[in-house]
Length: 325
Image (cartoon, rainbow, N blue to C red; front, side, top):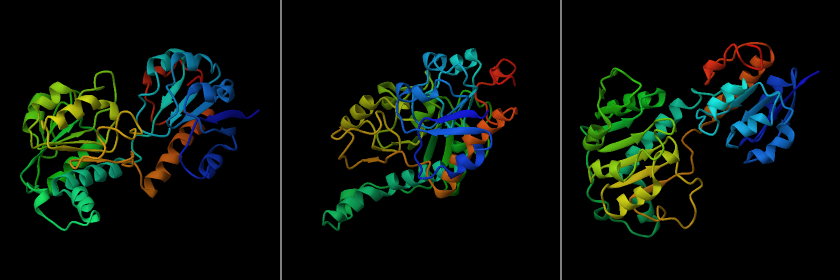
């Protein structure tokens, strides 16, 4: 008898990849839901769950899926999944940590350049019928300025390499990275905030990083500095960011992710000349989409075939999981 695999939600046009990967082993049920109550009707007897954004997937949700052996996230972050509860329940949780590293690093640099060269501001100016340089002043040369990376994982390291090519000085804060590399310098967070002309966020969303950028953090930044967020929206306290902008404690920001998401309309972050907001697009390219779609189904196939998956997030579940792996 074939296994049952439920897709809680997806953002691509075709499920050909999923069918090609799993049809020999499982019956696939594809949904487009946002909350557990919307997918549990189908997932209650599933053997595996493929997940994009729908959640949160809590201990209660897992208890209502007693046969589920693996929850495979299409993306990188697993902040919507209770990992401790999954381990306790014997459910393997996987993610897809490498599919969009280059894209997010490129996107971060695009936002950094847009901030320093006032690209979005000048575009809006010209669209409004004005052809003037002075409204964008002051602007500063990028070479020689300091980029501070909060978090120094795979993406941040790629950003550091790209920033170095522009002649920037790069510092980072990451309590889990012991030594600097690639010409960067490790500093404490307060020092990073005080030194940086651009603060770029790259940590995972955890209880410790939620609202890491709060009133206190913004007070430590230079009034000429820009904040860039291509990580997770809740790493920034949105109300504190609005206050920092209102009080001119920072020069501006460029946000690919926000909290809440999508950003309501109207909202205090909309309509500001020194704010760039994008619709969580940093991950996307055609190549990344292919990697995104293939990763999670491949992990499910491994578990259903009796193999240990590649990108397990809750590694303590090995040897005590429902899959017997």
